[in-house]
Length: 339
Image (cartoon, rainbow, N blue to C red; front, side, top):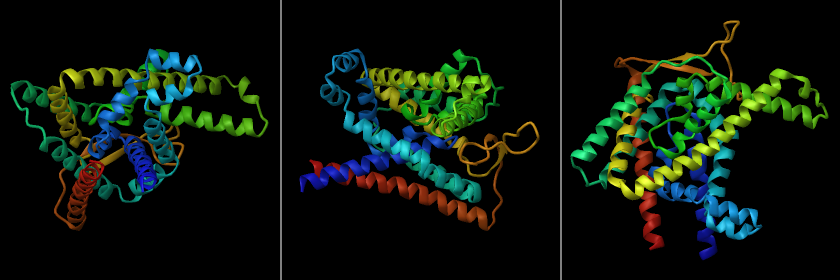
């Protein structure tokens, strides 16, 4: 019975990783919100915090089992496995639905964000002038970010490293979308399309016994950009986790109220009724990412008219709210069984 429950927990942890991965893929949606609602946000942050000097000493000294146990390896490995699988499976399905049923998918996300706000807020009782101020600042920052205009592309390696640090914010900071931040910084195409395509092309050539890429200056430049971006992402993931772990421990109420504000502010990004503006190539055609999906540049929002599509969209908003409430019910049931 115990082994079955352990296997079930592992499978659900992979599914949570799938959810985080799919959420991080969509500009405007934060994987951190999934972690928060699914009830493993604090464990995720505290596990990442364990990637520190002591962990590296254990690794260098060959104490792999101790290292794995110290960083909560089973939890992190299963979660990241779900995220990786998501990129090659769930996120592609999501891309399809966003392409053909964009209004309804955004409506579901909008409802899930509303449900997340309810979930986080319902047990939060420490309201005072500090937490209200933190809430207001979070809302203001979230709304401001959603209406920024994108910057121009910049392949300076220091800036790319900075983009890597910022891009993981959606995983560690609920309400902040890492992919949407990259759009605003102007480097979404460079870092999540061009450099990834360069890696795919290079691996394909290597497996075919073709090493001519070593003479391709542009390809090598893209690979260097991808490596620096990855290093920045890892740095950001560990750094943010340490910072958030500290402030959650010492300023939990202020932090939670700010997170609620960020999520409220992010409603502007996931507003279902918007016209998507796509990135264009030099020849005027739509630029596609590695999955064949048109690359988003920004959104132009509008108020809907009352028609059949709008009524369906409202119904999908309630579906999104119901999904979050179902996750909450499952989380409470699981905690009751474990107790």
